[in-house]
Length: 596
Image 1 (cartoon, rainbow, N blue to C red):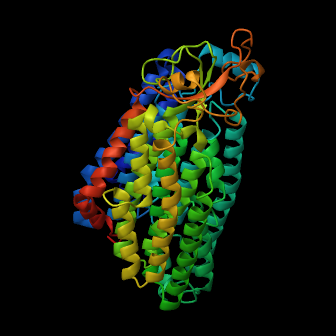
Image 2 (cartoon, rainbow, N blue to C red):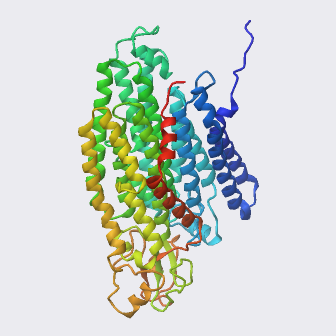
Image 3 (cartoon, helix red, strand yellow):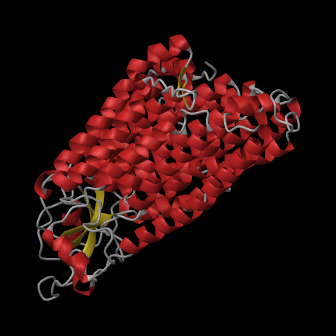
């Protein structure tokens, strides 16, 4: 009889993931035992503390992982390499900033429905809103999603990779359906994300099955050895089955990256999800998915023969080209800010893939730096979107005299003002906010002296080193096209007068107070007459006699919330990464290592 030998676990190496997942479990207990009045504060402190702890754990592990080349835990199921640790640092930092945006209440309330499970427009939803209920379950869900993201790029086991994918995906499906405004649109977005994400997961696990049939193992080193003709598998050295499996696994990962042709979920989900969740998802999910994709492709590239490697590079070329074209061309005609940022995210996925086509160490280093710059700029941009709001206002209400802060008694604050026409004149009503948003857009465009310029330069230089100079040239052209729709927004904010500014004294007073009035009808799903609003909509049931001819105006939420703090931090980071990037580039180069 063989004695059971317990597996030795290096808990320190697992600490970034362990801290976040343990905090998620504790958050569920807080929901059950902490009184409602103190639940939100407790969840916020716990979530921020856990993410800060994960970031500290990454910093403490950095020197050890660099010295040892990697740490294998549980027989290599959890394989912490310098690259995996670098991606974990990017995910933890972006998640910390994203949770600060989630916790913001500058407009007097958060972005989440009081009861996400209620039927939109129902009496129950209206009663929950009037009772002031809060959906604090979002914080444990964010922690579980972040835990899956931290595990995603830190494993050589494809089954664990699939588990990490599900752990990060399932909470995001729920979070996308919790928007306070435009509930039906939010639930539609969640359903689309869930349905298409299920197909992507099925493709990935089917690819894992093919790779297992080829190599007799789900471990990347064993599969790489089988590709090289080594090992005990009878199919070793015949890579057709392995190539089919690798294509399916890559398709599942590219879905999470948001690369074409697996991008179709991105615009609708980004638009329908609560804006803080969109920022969190856009930055963190992409970083984790790119990390996992790099881990799989680079791990298997060691055993590929030249023909198989060529097939993988052709796949990356095709996806990169299609992704850049779709992101830039379709993004140029968008009239909604969130959809514009969604197509910008798709284009950036293509730029990241440009640096990876050579499967080189320089390409992986460029990916780590690019993910950091993109994540910071994206979280900051969506934080700005959360602060630009719609408000129902009557002609007799005061316009406000405190610089356009939302939450005054001059009307009901609605959802974000996402139509581009509503952003006209923002540079006059909220110059600091318009300047920060312009900086984020310039960074996404790759303008010099911003972090985006250094990131794109690194990605294109890696492609040129790998001999893919035509792809790098196409990336430069796509970046030039993307500049158009970024500058269009900046021109609209800075040089275009507020809509209706010349229509009379009332419009002029509004432009000097809480914000510029939006010309025309309110955004989709927001009735111009509060009395006509369905149950659950703020302002529903207000008699038209007390609020005659109510109209929608654009206002800017208070600049004293956590979202404004995130905007300032992200703007400073984008500038520093563009002006003084050397130290971060050195860290990215150190992270570009895979094999212990």
